Image (cartoon, rainbow, N blue to C red; front, side):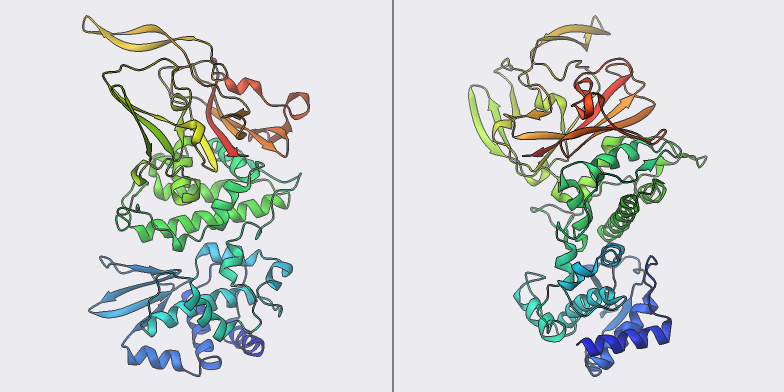
Length: 493
């Protein structure tokens, strides 16, 4: 196979100039590659079968409107006038990840190394799926034993790992060094910059792995109960296929930005925001200027794009009168984040006549927990279980008034929670607020790297240890005038 690949690379370069890293591979390039593989590896069997089955194969094309599209890994197929159309493609995520593989990583897949060999290996993975579609075979496990057998028989004579498995591995990319670049401020970008600083550079690899190594082509964006009903998290109508494409664009762009930062480059978070604008049009005003957006809403979108970040099947207790039932959340209750209120549940009993639920924090096993600060009513001291007087709205004599009540809190936030089973690895803070009110003017963040805390502020590109040589920033455990903790990020220890 090494000789065949070398011939294909040589012919590909001769006919189309080959492939240039950093540019999206075109349909024309893939079509040429397909014909070369058919000629030199399959002796024209693929195109012959294509004609026999009356199948059309297209490459990296737009989808026609109003057709039902099926997915098989990165291949899409549909029917037009009862004729099957197979759309062969390489996603931006695949290209980006493959192009950043080192020679050492590539040696796990193929010891023979040539420029652009990674793109060929990724394309061979898709050709294996194409063979299944052309010969009408189906397999419940898209990358199961039958796939491995066919792929190894045609392409993997050296017995190396499949490249798609390699780029989906948690060790397939470089994790942050001590020194790196960051996002700098650019037209109200602080919400994205602060969030990204936590997801990219905190000590927990769980966030990075979910974003960088998820093969989105294998993700169903429905629920287990209703897998064919797409749960759209965007503010615009789109199909599941359009959402998958959007996710892969965002995934590739975030990884490219991250890779540049590892080289020490400071850059603006512009390309990511342009992609998010396709999902949330109001990120940009009607006048064309960028506006500050809710950091929690962006994280919720990211968590649903990369479901490994979701809290699924978490335990809770259902209270009904004097009876208590243990339950596990259903798919419809999967959460990207919990509220501060849900964690600091009151220690006093609720009204026994009412039914309610409480999360069973002592038995929760999620890999990550993310908490969002609510708005009203305002709790001031998140880091204390002491009683606290808060103001809540109520109606009296037909008028809305603020009534002061005293609450007790069953739990408090700190660097470690739930009997030290979870460790805080990041926090995003909103500045310019009044306790209990929405609004604000600027986001910053705190990021735990190794065992020290770093303060990040994209204004002036501040990335520095907190006071006392990286000690935990106790000030983020309370809300006061001018500063409001917005998100806390925890990892399971």
